[in-house]
Structure formats: C-alpha cells, structure tokens
Length: 263
Image 1 (cartoon, one colour):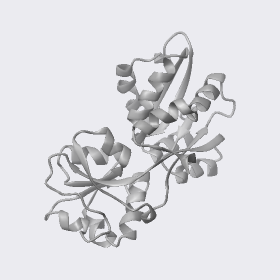
Image 2 (cartoon, rainbow, N blue to C red; image 1 turned 45 degrees about the horizontal axis):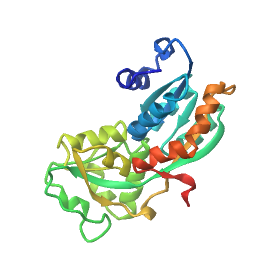
Image 3 (tube, rainbow, N blue to C red; image 1 turned 60 degrees about the vertical axis):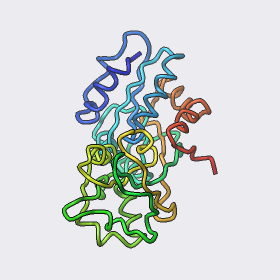
Image 4 (tube, helix red, strand yellow; image 1 turned 60 degrees about the horizontal axis):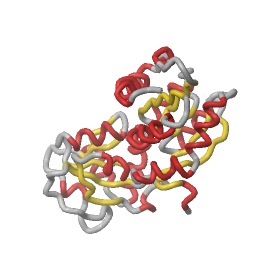
C-alpha cells in the first residue's frame, strides 16, 4: 500500500510524464492505476485510503486535467481506470479506438464563482443584477481552466456565454492547465475571482464561494468512469465496482459531489 505522502509526491509527476510508477509500488498486493480529473484529488485520496485499509492492493492515482489524462492514455499511458470531468474527453478516447469497458456516469458537480477568503466581494448570483466584470478592477483577471480543452474551462465558457458576459470577459481570463491551477491563482490572491467546481471551493480554506452559476447555464457537469485495460485485472474490476458503491459514494458526497444516479 502507498502512504499518503508518497502518493502526493508521485501522482502529479506521473500526470506530467506518465512514468512507469509501478516500480515504486509496494511489494505485496496488486496495483491499479487510476487516472482521475484534478477536481477529484482530495475525495479520491480519501476513497483510496479507505479502500486500501481493507484490501491488499496499491491504488496509484494520477491527477491532471481530463484532457491531459485522455491524451496520455491515447499515447499509451498505463491507466487501468479513467474518470473524466466531462463526457467529451471520454468520448474522444473512444474515437481514438482506446478500449473502454464498463463505462458509467459516476458523479455530478456544480460550477461556482470564488474569491480569496479575505476578499470584500459579497455573494451574488452570476447572471443576475451584478455583472462579474463589475467586480474586476482595471488589469485584474478572472481565473478559469483553459477554455479550449479543460472541462472546468469549457463549462465556464458555456456559462459566461449563457449569462451574456463572455464578450466582456474573454480577454480578461487567466487560463490554468487544470481547475486546481485556476483555483491556486485565487488562493494566492493573484486573481480576485475564479470559476471552479463547487467541490474545489469546499476543499480549500483559502477561497470562499461568492456565487453559483445556474445549472441551465452550462452542460451538466458529469464524471464518467471507464475501465481502460481490455483485459482488466481482478484488482481493477474490484476497485471499479467499489467506486460505484455506497461506501465510495458517501466519501465523494462529503466533498460535495452528487452521485450521478441521484436523480
């Protein structure tokens, strides 16, 4: 099993280079590599800790933007399970003729506007009487995931277009490589506002939620899960099954995710 400290040290490196991290795993049990959207970091780490406590297996998480992970998988990265923050990148992998099995919608999320925890910006509803642009001073930017490929950025663009603020804000965006990078700018007060998932806002004590985008302003934020290996190991099958069960879903729910089948 992998200690949380060792997991933190390597899962982001693996996302950058998709190194063969299996050589660093424990000597006893099987190993399962889970490529998961960056917004799942805290919740998935807790889920893995809970699972490993009762199973002789080493779950190796790799976190990055869904687009980065999908491209790595298409290039041969050794993922056993992939969880995307949107349907688009899972569909793209299928279009690349990557074998995907047992696909299921796992979780849902919401899109929120955040500010640094000590900000004077008061709560308001995006799309309401207060334009987001009015809360930015000259030279200040709105932090988002890269709107061309990062799911959180794609949802942000859809929402801004829907509420009629895209034209005013497009040139004032600070684009991050993933949603956690977008949040980091706000955490460091390098951006006065950012658009992230509700679960990201809940995971940080350095930001506060100042608004929730209407659900109908963007496509539903859905996290599909699929097994990547065409001949999955018993350990992969078992962990995939556990992720869709009540024990895992209760952990995800504590971080603000909603089970996709909650409707």
